[in-house]
Image (cartoon, rainbow, N blue to C red; front, side, top):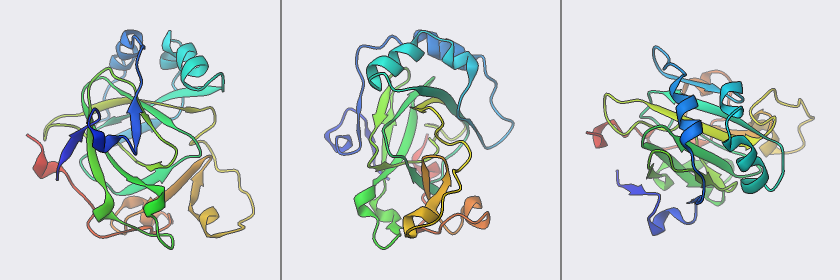
Length: 212
């Protein structure tokens, strides 16, 4: 699978690199959090990350004053499994280089996306990358077979917490698995067996063979 840099023209429909941020304080805070023993971990809001100087800058600059949270996804992963989206952009920032597997909302047809539409992008360490609201994404991937990743996740406050429990009005409502989180699962993904909407067809992409 071709892995494009986020600096390439291919990334423009999916997001952009944010400039002007000194991310050192956040990177140092992320390094204090140990890796999980296996797989990946995710927390929507982590106090040690939100106490850094970047919290106010992301809230007031990147999100125009909207309340935000800084959490993290970290561990080891090379597979697609699912794709999700929010009603707003997400900012990703890695301690080391990481890879995002992305597609676009307008490629969903009748509630299903063909995984042949998915593209891979590599983001450099320490660089904040905005992923647009119209971009489907999920857990980052490491860049080497034996590697790992730590990626800070900035989102509007409350995202990925408990679902609101609203009455279902349409098909899309049944994809809502958490607050501000709509999820499409591959049949092979653990989330599918937990009741998530089966919304991916084709190969459950695994980039392990593309890594050094």
